Length: 413
Ligand code: AFP
Image (cartoon, rainbow, N blue to C red):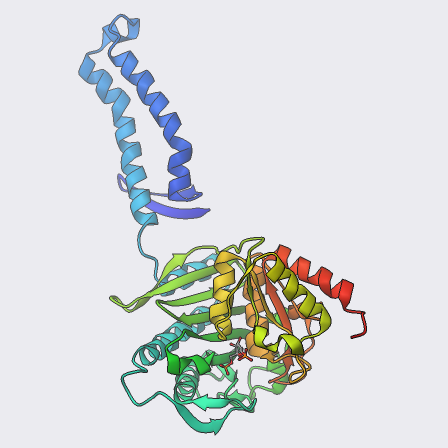
């Protein structure tokens, strides 16, 4: 449902619409019928009423209304088809909340700006000496790519200047970063992020992404932020999203009211609304898992993967969570990163990978659980870089997987 304001004959009116195309489809048969009836009256001169007035007057009387109506319709369609930028969308959404201060909107807008800067570097990664391993390792022991460092710096820099954030937790930093400037003394939010997820893909020009989540701080606004501001369950998150630096760059986010996607239009340098109210398919036939670890998975996971293979589901695994989840968000499917012998608790990070993605998946109508069948969003969190196993995606597929865990989970291997 859309509410738009139209100015016609100097009067502003609010109109509620389902969507331009639904609206036309619903009304068109009725309009054609009314039009045919009117035509009949105009060209049947024997009707009593017709003898009193001239043909021109009849035409004016009958069709002036139609003319106004069509003018209104074309205006509405033009407005509805107009490009909506991320900034515009955020402002409009904020306006719908009566007591909002605008700080959340500014924060989201700043994330969009940082994403554009990172996108620029990702796109020219092959051209400049920014490719390759930096030599250091991050908090969880992975090799750090130069672009990881760059993305991390840009996000921290942009968010610190925004004045809306009092702390940041990033995959690239062992501890959280308190942000203390004069501007953000009363900042209410903390941001958790993986600034460049899937970075092992950079050197081969395969899609990477940024994942972010936003929480409201719990500690008093006057002092510096505390660890507890970050160690909040997924259910406490106020917004989450990801940026996919792929064939085109997309920012997908939700602040609890459905999921919307924005594609970066490089010609105007703006994220434009391209995927409104994303709802993922209830079922699907893609499964996304690193099957190379098959023998290291628990029995129930192996059985479920066999089942997917028996049903000829299509296996797709990019090794960049953002890209893999993005596919199933639109085409339906299941994404799995079960616990392995190497990662007995799972590999993916709960705070800035699993929670934000689970938030989006649930907002889009899907399900996100761990391989021990707990709802991801309700998992307890004790450490910034805590890991978890994960199974998320189309509702019916996750349900099937759950049945396999229930059936084989208790069997001794
Ligand atoms: P990197 O950022 O180190 O490439 O890790 C990516 C990731 O966290 C996630 O995006 C992938 O789904 C997963 O790890 C890939 O892990 P494997 O290489 O073990 O399959």
